[in-house]
Image (cartoon, rainbow, N blue to C red; front, side):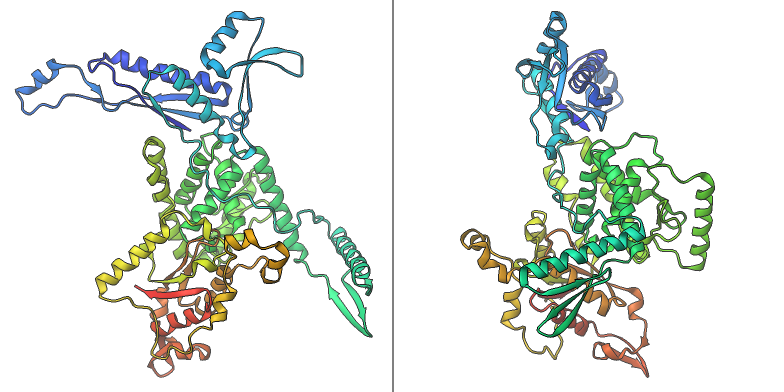
Length: 587
């Protein structure tokens, strides 16, 4: 965490020792405020600015006119926070019978200090902090702000970084059960137990005769027999997911900032329109590597530092030369590491290795979560975006004051990187309220500037535009207005409620299935950015054999060979998203 303090003006000709004493005084106050919450506290020394001389003859006069002054009135203090102690709710001071120590404690904390009796019978001075579980990471901020505000000169301004980037995605409950057994025999018995419960529910609720077995439930209705198959993921996948969940749960229990950092990382990837290119499991492994990798620095204790380490890992790891091994429990020995590197080099030489190779002790040679994506081109773009974001975030930590817009710019979508945009209807998006403020306006201005530069706006329509979309299509894909939710009973809305329906995700799947060989489609699947970015594949414009299913989207350039008709392709994209797509714009 970083604590910049803007001090009130002092005499312009302070001696150098006095300036350093000023920094040391602020550092000492921060150290006393954080106590054992911080492993290390340091104030960065301010550079000096000497008076400027207009010529050679003015140098002596400039030096004689006054001593150098600090280049800034700001004092920047950095702290390495202990992840286990940082979220402590009570700071326990000296016992009440130690009058001198208790007086010093009250002098430091002022009215925040109070006498408390603890469960072991001790009566001590203490400072209590009230913060819900989701906001306890801001307790160090509150402690530092209180102590500095109490002891620094009037007019000093204090700003801290630990409370930044709090409006990330909220924690979500797991979508699937997490208690599947690891043993395959027990796995089959668990399915049989579910079948018995389902048969009992059908008998009690509808009066049907049902016969359960380990693989299915036979239901007899009006002389007919229906077999309900109990479908679950294949056991190997369940075992891998179970191990991955255990790994993530262990990291969450060990590092308090792990969960918030995962949500921030997913939020950042979404705002870069790369959320569909990197799965949740891969993001969690990358964040885990940032927390427990072989780094000299201690693990991050705040979400801001965790996000910075995540970005730095993405930007600095040699993805084309080595796999990333995530081994928080240190289960992999040196011989296994050498074998992993040899297998990776063999696969890379054969051209079968994924662009981003992430290994774990249970997945040493396959890279299950990144085997299909991201592609090499997307990974190159991701590395560049992460490097730029890491540099921007590092700069933001050093100049916190007045940088609210700059923090938001860290999550700005890369509008210049795409060749076409599929604009989505905002009222059809499931998470329209999650869009970064100002991003929709940025996109509109970007498209208007491009249209002004080219004289018109290419909407991607073909000469054969086809039949307009039915009005009912728009009616189906529309979120419930807030006034309807407030005025209508829940039972009245249930018939029209689509549970778990993700129109953007399904639309992306359709686009990739039909046109994945022509373009890369990028969208914010977790947020509410109302557009899908389209980036044409370079190989798409090389004449290739005609595909019968897409013959109407191809211009023949030689017998049996063709190139895509972009206007018709964009029109097909519009038709695929009928009721969801508002407009398709080619740049």
